[in-house]
Length: 299
Image (cartoon, rainbow, N blue to C red; front, side, top):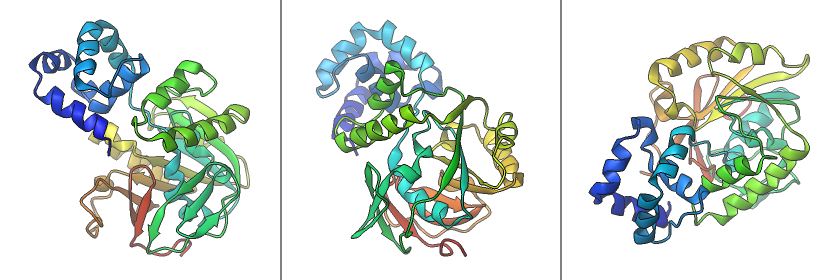
């Protein structure tokens, strides 16, 4: 949670002028996190609701322009911690293809290390902490020989504006998330992934066909399909199920409506982790926790 953003949201909800300005935007652009991130990206204040209001009203033309071209592309590296048990159990080596990749930072699970309680896996930086229950942490990181991402608007971590936008998307209080973003951004800058501008349905088969021989294709996505219209989401699910290799989803809970799922462990927001349409675990959006309820990894 972000107390700063909670205060801003409460203030905006009672402000007819700001609500009127936001009402001019397309519905998909009226997301609180998008507005707050744009203001921070432009150098505006967010800690004080009165200062935020003054800045937003005075600079609305500039803010509106950014809102119309920007999207929420939070490239949360911490999500690798909930993907790791599945990735490590698949036939190695892996060819990773991320849908909705943003800058592709989640394509480097082998370059991070992980802390599950008292157990540490891997040797890289940053160290990603995850409270895991119901599953034994893996003993290794995966072997990755190919990394590719598909996104409507891929971001480049070597571009100062793109990196600044990624940092602006992180909540103000979360200094640890900014630090780990910068650490993996440095890795991606030195060893860039293949990032392709394209649609998750129309352009996925061609990119998947570029996987090198001898590698296991793994198509995955995290917190992406909630931004995709229902009909397009269904078309993607039909497509990815027929591709060779494996499909890992860490996304909206209603992605697999044919399955009866246990209740999430708390009332907080959770994603559903699934492998090849088999539900496995509830996960927290930033990878900070997972509650496993499915078959053990690798079975």
